Length: 113
Image 1 (tube, rainbow, N blue to C red):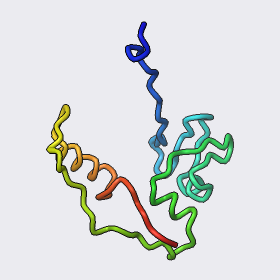
Image 2 (image 1 turned 120 degrees about the vertical axis):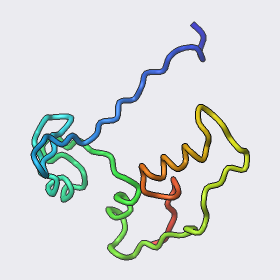
Image 3 (image 1 turned 90 degrees about the vertical axis):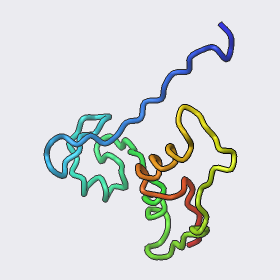
Image 4 (image 1 turned 180 degrees about the vertical axis):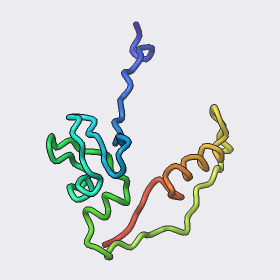
């Protein structure tokens, strides 16, 4: 089997699973029930097993920067499609879907504190 013909194993992304109870999340690692406020206070880390959940870019900035000091730069730039790129779907369609999902215009957030 050639080097490039081998199938790469998929990476499983664990999300926070809400377990029907309002405000409660079941840890995907240890199955502990955690209140959403407790998870937020613990910076998206399970208090029992210390499993780290994903943080968005803005959540990480809030965690690292002092409150109210972060100023985002280059917000005037918008993504374009100069190559008129087409894959399994058109780039503008893929871009608009990603922007809706992330609630951001760009994939990168640059700024100063």
